[in-house]
Length: 128
Image 1 (cartoon, rainbow, N blue to C red):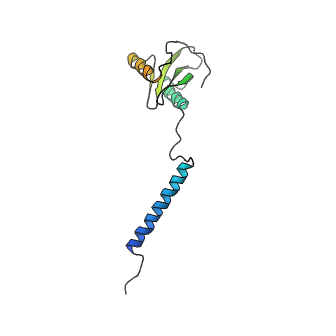
Image 2 (tube, one colour; image 1 turned 45 degrees about the vertical axis):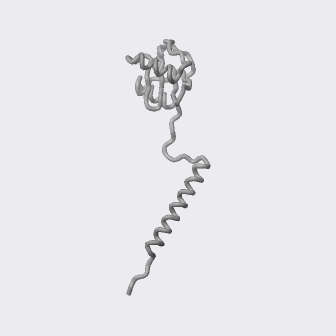
Image 3 (cartoon, one colour; image 1 turned 30 degrees about the horizontal axis):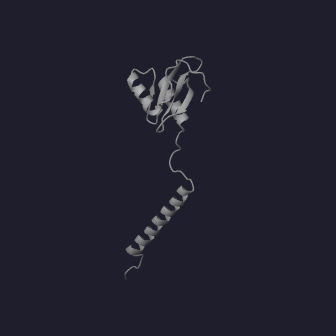
């Protein structure tokens, strides 16, 4: 006696329908504003974490302005100290104004934050 079961063609048709249904549900979810994956950090959060990685856990962002192509520029310093240093923060890199790569910092500042004034040695603005 031969066993009668679900044929290969039927299995393929059912799996294809499931894939199409999941694709449609994903499309509806994305069109309604659903986001998949980890939450993206805001530019201010990203800059603060990069500054703390460079300057230590007591570092704070004192001024921040939006630049071009997801870059932010600003001033950072150590909490309780007047001295501040300019920085340019991009999603994958931060360059500080007191970095030995001064020419690269100036080039990055001109490219991503052309209106940013990075010559001040102290910054008095509200903390981010």
